[in-house]
Image (cartoon, rainbow, N blue to C red; front, side, top):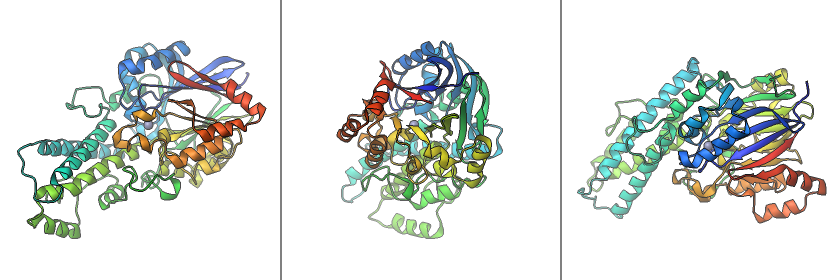
Length: 488
Ligand SMILES: [Zn+2]
């Protein structure tokens, strides 16, 4: 049986920030295997996402060999609701998701239940707070900038609600939740039933797939630990490509967040004087009462603290879901060239790939350790749309050493939502710089095609004639996608 010699990698514009990746495995110019990874946009619509899904349908001839959903976020799954009528006409042979999406997995079950409860509380809290703050008859406390503070609180709460909606699968700012629109859960169930479902574990290597002969699929994450140690590390300082100070997505760790992490998002009820959502310790309660009982600070002043905390918890929840990403590496077994697909994995997920047992299993099952896979990576689908925390440095990019590296970033910069820190935070500048250097300018974005940054142009100008030819010939652009052919 002949082997796959190239992969045509198509990254779609879904009408907003999101992932939708079609991999067409090639044997002498003919597609022998088709694989779709995710299909969604943060704030898109049936009209905006349909061209991409119609192109997928046409290109794969109405048949996908493998459908992978990396994690349950709106920007990765909305298409299965919004373009369901088109997906209904596409048959799928196999479906892969991470172990965390397995409803029969005991560890996953505990996590998902706790997570669901936390989201419900945040949702409830945000709705109530917005209702109270929307009351125009209220008397503002006699403190400096009370009006401005109130506006700031409102914005913070709206961000909280939007982030919760993002988790659940509703359009940002949408009012009626229940029954209003299909949810991320429904999209996941739709995908689960679309083909033969398999839940993947880190350390697994899948090979000898019909049509994909010569390819090995290494499963890297999400880490599977009973204590969720790696899993809960969303931000690890030395792993991140830092932004400027005071960025809204780069906030300091708050005690409430620590509690959230330490308890596995198990927030203890009934202890807080103002709401059930958050447990306070004795010192915090004393501090709270002191402020609460002082005259200058009306109840609204207290609200400021915990409103910001709840926005922060919502952001933490988003990161936790990002960390559930099914991360994998695909290797051309003859040449050893590797394609790296981290989903939206954050620090802990990347770090988990290096757990000795995981790396050893990869070696035993597929012949390469995690570090070896990273060393041989020639194509990188940039994690989490180019955010500062979606590509790990010491556990990730620093190991990527191939002089052939090309990277693709699923980013439409002007569609980055405010809750993520706004478009000025994407792509994270330090990461962008490293990527441009490492790829020698061979970086491709959804919104720009081959990136237009001056430094990238300069570096592309310095490529050898062979490299230039390879890059130019391998890149293509369609009406709703950018494409790159990765040679094996
Ligand atoms: Zn995403």
